[in-house]
Image (cartoon, rainbow, N blue to C red):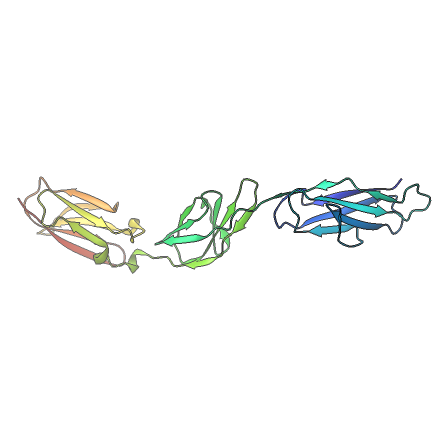
Length: 247
């Protein structure tokens, strides 16, 4: 009695839009067996030992009917064991929003950021801070291992040298009695480039740091009244702010 088995590549459980290839292997099929492929009982494909489709739905049942031309067989036409296909849905195609140098994926989880088409090592959170101008995309993978990718979009990196420090820094209050605040606008995305020093009216250094925050508070309670200078600088520019301490 002839038989026919069906192999499935890559697997019987796939992500949507995956091309699934079914290959019939006959036993006692003769020299020229014929094949009729069916999906849910409806004839598909052509008379071939191979059938493929990228449009299957979850739960579709694929079979092949083989007719042997072997002589002296008791039953020429046989049916394969049905192959039930599991099709997992793809995640929603993500979009990217930008605030300064920070990119945000519309997907909360399953993100992998790409720069110029290549995955960025360790960049798997919802947000990613760029450090160079380039084409960025995000790939999202769901719990079934199915992935989709956003459009690749060119984003421009805004370095500190492109921001005028005078416009990004505010000093308050001025004049002051004890404490003075140095506030840096959020448009400055990389504070690691900044250095801050404070000198008195004679030019003597009284404070220095390269660890600048967006909000910086300085206590002058033990210092004499008078004029002080707050200096902020990076490799490209330097800005000095005059402040006055009152009694």
